[in-house]
Image (cartoon, rainbow, N blue to C red):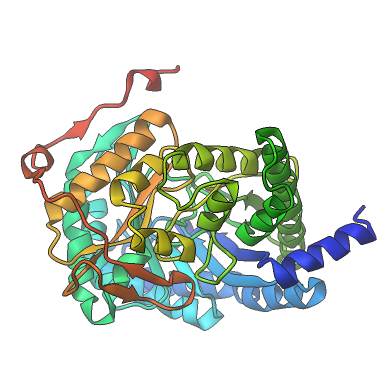
Length: 454
């Protein structure tokens, strides 16, 4: 039972410490929409989404009203479209037409984003996978709410370097096709190693083939709550630090569990997982970087940053798993540059660079996230950055991701403005030495020796 003290404490976290449920995401299987006729396939997809998710936004608002808990986004994830469209799409343009249908369906039910314009190619690409990947720039340029992701690597299969090379080109082309909007298309495109099937966060959400027909996944967030809790034990020992983070993560996760169960009941859709991630926003006081500073760093990027982030990530997970039996997604601490005001300040101060961010991704939940790079960065360099991040995930048996935004027409010191949760991103320098000969090699990097566990 929840006592009156916990109610008051939760209200405090919501009103003054930026506690929110970041997203209720409904995963929807589109496997029964497969059809050899493209028009019929699109009709089935639209009908399936608008029927299944017709009450999602309304339900979210009802829960907000009932419990006074902010639910920032209502979202949908679908079966990777490379699988759904394989029977009827024979050109990139035909795949892009499915993206238009997804966008129309997302708008019809009123969700903020729809994820799953995706392909899973960690070992090899089918013809449909390659066609979908080549369609991504057009699909993201011609839609508003569709998000795309591609899984390029895994611990069990290695790194598909042919797909890595192709995605470097597609990220550049997406940036060029959306240059009039500060390359916004790239903010809706992410590549993964070890992508989870049940991630509720965008841009990487898709409904995995191991999932049920429909499921409710919830992502919670509370960097401001954690920071406030740490202020009360300033100067304390590491034991006090860890216990405080763990207890706070437990409280935050219980809020998410409440919302998830209620949404599941009201929508008559099974509850899937709680994602325990600390997901920052551009709002003041809602920053993972500020937590790191409260732990004892002058700025993120200072010596000790990776250790502090590792501590934070681990304690968030330890606290969260005590609050819910079904934990999944990414779960931990996000370090997106554009979405975290404290990270932006650290970049501007010269404390944080791309190489340090890469080191931090070894111990956090995602990867190089929402990072603007100069508009003249080559596709080969983008692929090299992706390959480095895929290697970290593969060897360390964890999820890693890359969401880079080549700022077409921009240079170092310029800022991309996205608005809303996506925030703004200062253009960061990239190592200028070439990796073109490395990226040009064909095939895949094999899985590490510890992947053989049968």
